[in-house]
Length: 187
Image (cartoon, rainbow, N blue to C red; front, top):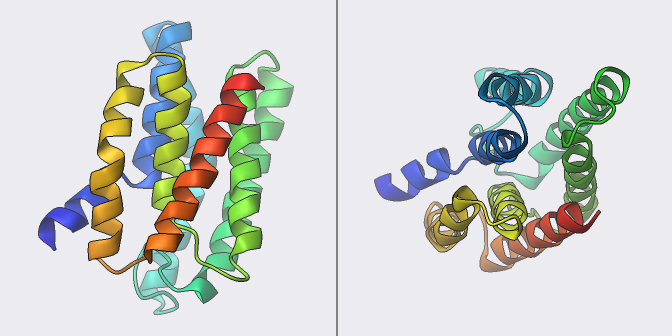
């Protein structure tokens, strides 16, 4: 159980998103610019979502920060979607040539599909984001992408062991993430 929990923390969507942006930025930009790209993503998306998670758990509205119950997901998708739209607006106005525009659009699409599916099933966002990052980075031959690909089976095991998801939910998250990663690469 402890190993499963640590795997879920180490490969949390916040971490995999930051790794994806950092690796992609490092391949295109100076180290300082890459760090700024990661900082912008953290500011626009991770900070609002982390605040939401902290607030919901603290108020007793969620059982844990993973929003493990399907009924907890709508607000997570709403805040995530608004955060991504704000990031998209910022990038469009401030850095219209940014490589991150495609990533934000692909992530918005992935999040929308997961949100719609929530009516029937709780898609694993851990798997969706980890697979998105692994696929997108592996397609550009990034070592981080290959490392994330290797981490996917242990992450599946962790999510199942923690009983946060069923096999169908992790499989669906993996498929949706892979499709988003492929779309990101070929957009």
